[in-house]
Image (cartoon, rainbow, N blue to C red; front, side, top):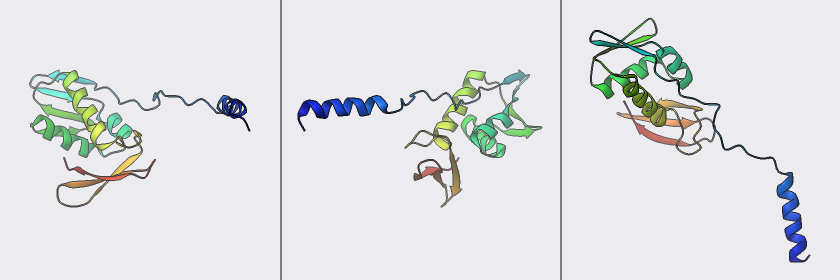
Length: 138
């Protein structure tokens, strides 16, 4: 087989392969739906964020409490934050939560869960690629 025949076979093989999409439009982090009432900020779509992350709302509330360093309570699927915070601040913290505790570092897919391992650590387990690594507890 000559070099030209080999190149033609490769071209034909690549032409028959399916085109892979590079867009990741199927997974979108929900934006924060918040309002400020007096000295409290209310995140109204906590349950939607928790459902999208496949994590308990209490875990996300605990993370937000640590990040903002303020007391937080959950009432009727809403997150009550003591202090005035903009939607932009909330979106940054929610995105950081998803990047750290939901989206796999190896395959960048959100199909994962956390298991408690040792003190102060979680075991991050990706259900898509099987990756396992330790991450700091919130």
